[in-house]
Length: 357
Image (tube, rainbow, N blue to C red; front, side, top):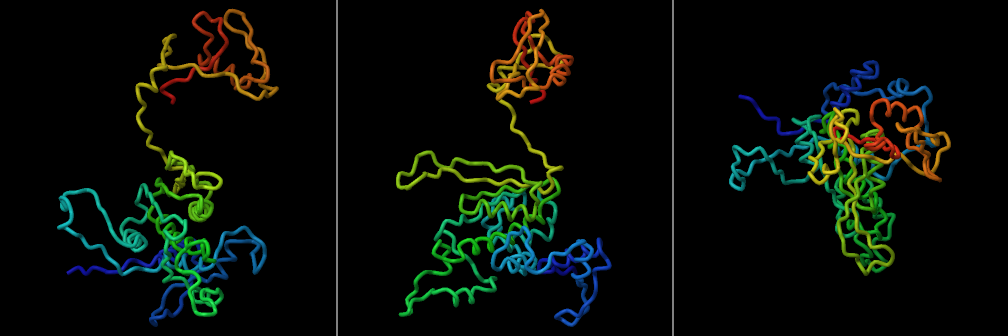
């Protein structure tokens, strides 16, 4: 009888195996907490392999850190003994549906999914709690220095009255950003493991933590895999109680696991978008519309005289230049991508083909 292992795998073991494959000389053995022999990384040897000049101690370097970051990172690797339990009675067509709705702590759920879907998820969208104050209450169970934080801060006054709730993540709390970062960091780390090579993650966030969220994503995905920051207008009516600006937007950060393999599925074009595309010269490449050949401000090397089919000459308007260099323009002209009008006497314009949009 096959027995189920009611515990997720330890991500550290997988990381050790990856390092062992690349640098076998950096792997050694030690006696684990349970008395058995286990593999371990010799970090001194690994550092020698990865750098000619080591950064030591307080030597300046570019880094993004905060209190308990190491604890948050370890949390992503700690196995969970949670499991998924189907609720057949509350489900619709449970045995045939191709959809799955999971309810529970998202970090535990992500760890459970990592067992079978490591590197297999095409797209992840997350809408984490916004760090706007009392709306976000931080679970500090895994934070190492929380008790020390209480001792160093005057949580209670001289009469023993609570001055602020240290677990409520409002701005009177000295750990306003730290609490939020420790919550989101391990979740992004596990989500990164789940994504396939051509996968991407979409993250909703507001002004309070958008800079920190980008730094976290840059750490895992790398800046080169940043796709875009999409601004979403979430409200239309202005909030008159705001003192300065009435914020009306949120952000959606998009990162690819590997930008070289990432592709967007575009929406189909509408008839309205296509109505301006014609083919008056029966170009074999199909329908096209005219573009603009001029651009500003003027660049001297892109100001030159163009002679049309009828002998008429053209220069860009004052303060403007041609969009392309003379060499590029001649290439486009030879490829029938420049239009001088039906009679060949109009100012030149580039042809924009529908098939290439």
